[in-house]
Length: 152
Image 1 (cartoon, one colour):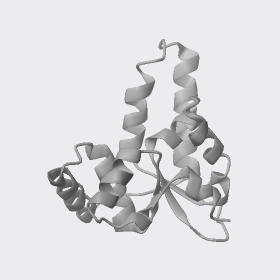
Image 2: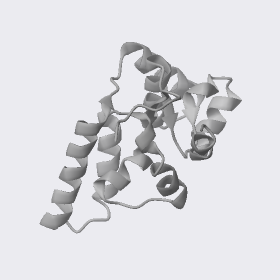
Image 3: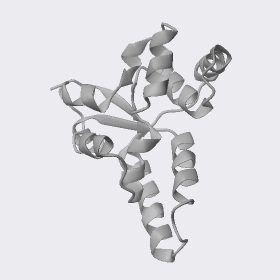
C-alpha cells in the first residue's frame, strides 16, 4: 500500500481511512478516496489505531473471526505504512489548538503531527478543516478526499 507516487505526497491517514483496513466500511467518500491511496506514501500514528478500536469495539460482537480480521488489519497497517511519531512540536501545537477552542485532542495531534513532519493529513473532518481555516493555521497540511482526486 505504501508505494511512491509521482507527486511524492506523503499522507498521514485520519482514523476514518484506517477503518477499511480493519475490515469496516465507512462513508462512500472515504471508500472512494481509499482506492487512490496505493499511489502515495502513507503514514499512520498509534493514536489513530486507538481511535479505530474505540469505534470498532462498539459494533463488533467479539467473535474470534472479527478479532482476527482486526489484528490482520493492524499488522497490514504496520507492514505497509510509515510511522509518524508524536514529537514535542506536535504536542505543543495540539495544546495550542485546544486552547484556541478545538477540543478533539486526537484531531489536534494528527494535524500537528502532519504539520511537524511535513505530511498531509487526509481527513473528512469538516469541523477540523473549518477550525484550521478560521484560525489561520496552515491549510496546506490538510487534504480532503476531493482534493486527493484532483492531484493527478
